[in-house]
Length: 299
Ligand code: HH2
Image (tube, rainbow, N blue to C red; front, side, top):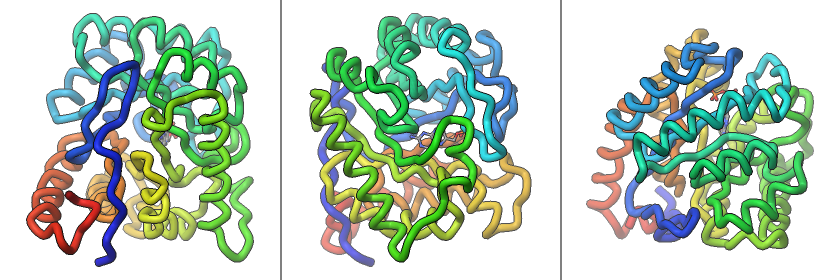
C-alpha cells in the first residue's frame, strides 16, 4: 500500500476547529423534493429535523443541508428564494436544537449561503467550487466559513450528467488542474487556506472510469495539504460495478469505496447512511493507526 501524505490536523470554520485526527462524516440532509436517491423523503422541515437527529445519533460529525438537487438525470434549478425557503428554517432550527453541531450548506448561490451563514451555518459546500456565483468567495472569506471546493463542470442542471464528461489522455491530471485553479480563486478571494477542503466531485461530469481513477489518485489531491472530502454515497459507479440498481441499496459499495478513500488520504465522507460508514471507517482507522509506518497518512 502506498503511503499517503499527511493531512492537516484540523479544518477551520467560523473560528472553530474541526480536528481531523479521525475520519469525519457529513450526513446528508436533503430538503429537496427531487433528490435522486431519497426523492423528497425528508421534506418539509419537521421531517428534516427528525432526519438530522438520526444522522447525529448514528455518528455524523457534520450535517450537510441541501436545498437544490444535482441528480444524475438532470436536475431542475431552483431560484435563490425557493432554496432559501427550504434551507434557512432548517439551519435555524438545527442551530437552536444543537448549538455545537457542525452545519454545512450545500449551495452554489451566495444569496443562500449568506442567509444560512446568518443563521449560524459553519461550512459552505459548493459543488461548483465558486464557478457559478462570483460573490460566494468574498462572502466565505468575510465570514470565515469553512468551504468545500468540489470539482464539477457545467451548471446545476447538467453537472450530474455526462454532458461535460469528455477528457483527453489524462483525465485525472485535467480534473486536478481544474480543481487547483478553483483553490487559487478561493485563496485570491481571501479565504484562509486552513478553511478550504477539496473534493474530486465523484460522478460530476465523470463516467465510472473517471470516478475510479480519481479515487485511486486521492493521494495526489491530499498532497495539496487541504482536507479531502469524498462523496461516493449511493452513486452510479457503485451501481455499475455491483449491479445494484436502486441507489438506496448501494450501502455496501459505498462503505467499500469510503474505506479505500480513507486509506488514500480522504478524511471527510459525505454519506446518506451514516451508521455503516461510521462503523467501517472507525474500524479501518483503528487498523491503519496500528501500522503507522506503512500508512504515513493515517497518523
Ligand atoms: N454529491 C452530491 C451533492 N453534493 N457535495 C460534495 N462535496 N461532494 C459530493 O460528491 C456531492 C455533494 C450529489 O448530489 P445529489 O445528486 O443532489 O444527491 P444527494 O444530495 O442525495 O447525494
